[in-house]
Length: 301
Image 1 (cartoon, rainbow, N blue to C red):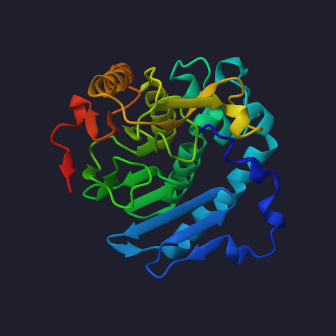
Image 2: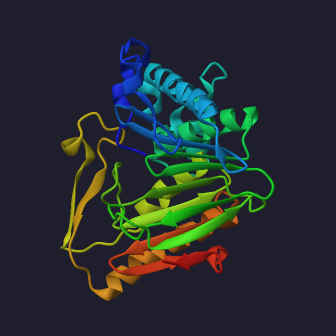
């Protein structure tokens, strides 16, 4: 994600006295981390039963990752291709850099993968300790870890702001999908494109997050009904200053909609052929499209 989501993390979470206001256990056993821009839901199961204690351990790690990110904020706002790799960087920073650099998008910063990477590291930490199913949902960027026989059901929206998904996909332990991320107009990050929702499935959540940002950016056409502004005019502390982002899209003619969908799908196919993603779904003004790799997996609700 690219809107400087974790700026608030510059305040150390350890200085927050009311820890219970940060980490909460919900009635169904899910653990919620609600701190600044982070709203992470952690689900941990052992053969269908919630492992709340293990989920809380993951929540503690999530806050620690925010602290690590806060110390490197100037660095992760740089373009990934301009950053010199350093083994002294925290793991969360290294993964963000690697994921975004692999997209080969010149203007991408590590923040394009921040939510997915955080979810991924929390999921990996929990899974190493136990559980047969771990799902970490960090504001719609989801890390999934499954042992043999387990299945995760993920809803896919055609509008980011929609209350209910329009499609469902079942992810099994043998499918090689460990991350699902969504980007597009109206989300919590900036986009250069016009898609109402782009959902990407990948081996892990850091790649899914970075790829969703890239694909969403490429769903782009020129039209008088599309409004754009410089990112810094909307959010002065943005990591993509000097770049124009989409703020509103009016009703497009069908040809423009198809053109934008086609550009997004072409970008998705390139990423798919490189092995960076497992599939992508794109929605725009009532039209949808997806990579052939999702044929037979998507179920309309």
